[in-house]
Image (cartoon, rainbow, N blue to C red; front, top):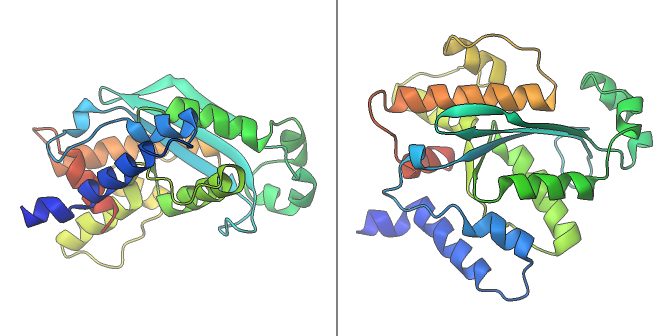
Length: 236
């Protein structure tokens, strides 16, 4: 009973309930928080997912900028490429050309892009009712939290995040494996997944989606792993 009470998923659910009860919150944000409903018995196969990757000028959400956003959905253990979206952000693009070269993003791509608010609105609409996945999700979460704080005055929105990097670290720790490279490309290589060109938000989102499905299969080869297990591995 104590284990259930203090499980990180149960703590998240309580925060979600409190957020939904706040009348002043927007319907857009409530939609992100209210679904999917997950208990400790919910299996991963019962849920839908959206895999997000951001390309940014750096890792500091307080001072760096989002250059592009890419995402793809997973339904019924299949990656839905028809759901794929790749957006370039045009806000303040004049300050990032040097960094953009590292990400293989040119200033012209940014000038032809859309506003950050438009891009976030599209992502929030796509993410409603889904679990959000990212590799090293602390980066994506920090930038989204920064946006929500700036435009909605909401701090630490209780979204259900799954982190494929944290899952891999904790699985390796359980096998007593140390000093592994947990980058997306190196982790995929250990699963025998094909090599893709990285530093592209959509390609990295698809790469992470494939990795997540492989991790889920390794954790439970014959039955569906509980979402509580994946969430716990993501937040240890």
